[in-house]
Length: 231
Length: 196
Image 1 (cartoon, helix red, strand yellow):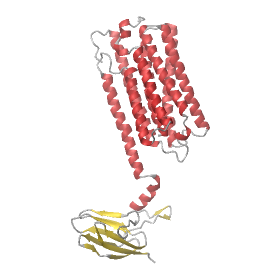
Image 2 (cartoon, rainbow over the protein chains, first blue to last red):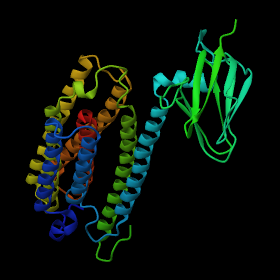
Image 3 (spheres, chains in turn green, purple):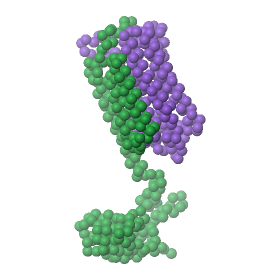
Image 4 (tube, one colour):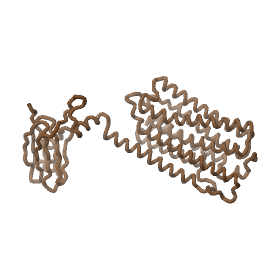
């Protein structure tokens, strides 16, 4: 019971030598100092810097796993290596997956846009009693047919909160752009509407005034609509 | 684990214990991975308050890193002495490991105290919640490692360096190297990453 470890055990390859610890120590120091200097001297910045220092960290991790933990060395079956690889895979899925999903969510739903997006796409016409500018209910729908033959009708007279459907009437893609060619103007959130083959795009008329539009693939075809405020 | 024929009964048992401890370390690593993921997601959510870039003192963090790295090294050297059965060397190297770990912990305490003193607590915003949770969890591991190490050293002094103690030290050094590896990522991603 009180017997000490045998000398063969002491020098066995799987437990490492002073040299291996020393090599691991010096390499780790180097791989700590370099990213530190990269950051403090601002040699590179932004995501390039982040990726570089993370690469240094991963390398240092591998160095320490090899020189300090002696993973995979020694005669035993490599159950612990297999377990490590499995854990590493789960970690990659959890960390990269979370970062990817949350970044995606954030870029689509940054706080300032959330209320606006909801108001427009969900048709929320008031938040806490304050009108958002979105329209309540469905009013009259005007149809505008777009084809290589032209736009018909070329003028729509509509009431506030009516809708216009731009309908692709032939087998080609059309792009409805607002303003006179080649200007880019916006109506609401959109500067252009892409009409794929046999598809339509609907806009809600929540800005009053007269607006012109054209078929960007055939800029000679233009049209306009006037939105009148009620009352 | 399958024991090869040359292994004695005791060595096979030791091997099983090592593997079991390795499994624990891997699950612990998973927990840290989740905390890292949380930090990665929340690191920009400061509610307009100070960011890591404004608050982190990099030279101090570099000192922490070097202290912990050195303690990982002395722990390895101590382990070689333990397998040789050299009690005095074990006490020296693991004693050094303990002191370096304590120095690391003191700097971390100082850093946390400064942050809290300036009004940045765990409930200030999502960034600080995830920061204190991640770094604090690592700190708690260091504390438990130090208590464990101190206990083993007391036993080594009192009862001598028997096979039992060598096994405990082997598990502890595995744990200590593991904490150093986790710290590399805290140093890189949390602290250096704040300046990227």
